[in-house]
Length: 218
Image (cartoon, rainbow, N blue to C red; front, top):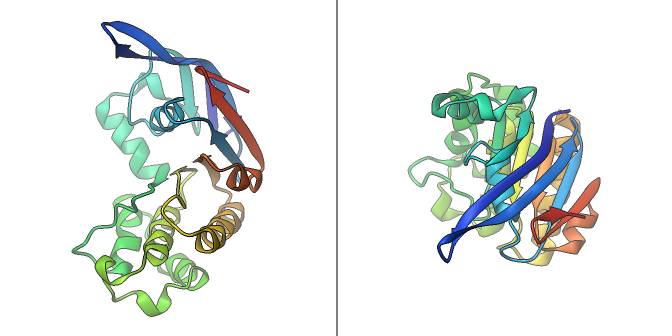
């Protein structure tokens, strides 16, 4: 398994008390497979995504990413895991304005020492970005920026790809096209995809789906 979450509990402060937002949550995800997590706003979807991405700590239970136990890592260890093993596609893209498309795509791969120009050329071609490589983020549409973010996240060939509402700011037609390309590339590269969404339509396109409610999964 690329991802294993075992009985994870996470509490947050509320009205002077600790409220569990995740209560003994468990799930697993293998290489080349995709999992959608749905739930109402405030149900803990993004919180779980952050825990899996080693962006935050949890109170009890355990998370393993590609065999690494997250609770055993210090800050530098978590940073190294994110740099070498985990990629994230955010709803707001998070492209670097001062870098052109080509440089944005290659940035994480170079940091992870996995820069592969042939793979990046293939990603750019498959995602329709080849004519845009010299442009800057401000010169791109929302759909084009999202495709750049996906190319960047896959360029380092991550073991685990995390996506937080990756098509939430796109129109339905563009969002469906972007999702289809992402799923195709994830399957081919044997990357595990963990996607958070409020859309049942998007969730239905993935291999499996789980629903988060009152801190637990169904």
